[in-house]
Image (tube, rainbow, N blue to C red):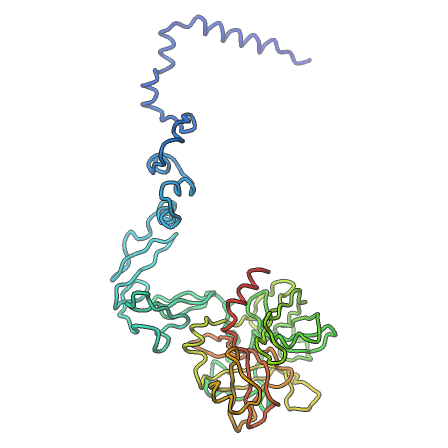
Length: 437
């Protein structure tokens, strides 16, 4: 049967009739007067256009009803003051009760930090300070040391991927994907003193697979081994700018050890973006550094781990000191003049040498963007094919990248030293490129 509006009209008629017959007393039973109604129900702000003309009120905006960040910003004016209120407003005050023994508590979102009184340190300000500043032993910090502006002491922080231990000095890896870790068991690096490392590269010995998990093998457009590089995160590889001069297309292989043998740990990815340093000079080999962006993020594993990049302060304060022992790895030629490269990844252990001393032994000029390493009278050296590879140093259980193999005057000459790109000088450039692409 077709739908008809007549029943609905009948209901409307009955309702209207009842309203007509309702007395004034009946109306009073149903509706309160305006003053009484306002005692029971608070009028919503959007019902009163004049409220928008009133000054912002904390009670009206955020206590009587739920407010958003912008409404709170109207009250507190500055972003800093608004954030301080917002953290307490949205998740409570984490400083109640106060866990800071000798200092004051600073509320954070779902956490807190203790700002210690002079003479105390630790997560809870319960330990006596061991260092007044950063000048001695990096202030006792595993990674970064910062001196307070008021000269009342120093505090430590960690690079990305690490968390600060409760002692406020040690840096602990968050997981196995954190940079600068060697994950293989019974590593030659971890079972022997670092100073006792034996040379691998030119005139050296073959090491153990997985002891340089940040090592990258760079193939040219013909699929041939061309240079080395260093993995610094899941998307980017650092190498020497001079490696990019003869070809325009490259592929990166990670997790490799035996260069001519498939071992199931390798990952090969095309390079989709090549970024040499804009001030690279092929004549002086100054600014010999470049970034390669991989086609897709690589998955880290026991044999693929990024190297850690040090802050400039950490590098200059500790890692670049004369005599600091470093490790250089690569598949380069094992002697000058040969046509073949090493099939196994090798390494050498070399001490850093002050630039003024290095200059006495080199014909070509050195710049402030270069590091020098080696021992006069020794044949240990990097050689062709090692270019762009890592110069690493171990500091307080973290492996840091401090140099890239750049140039030398011959290979293994007993009266010469090797020259490496000083990576810490390029941290701002590296971060700028990564953020733009």
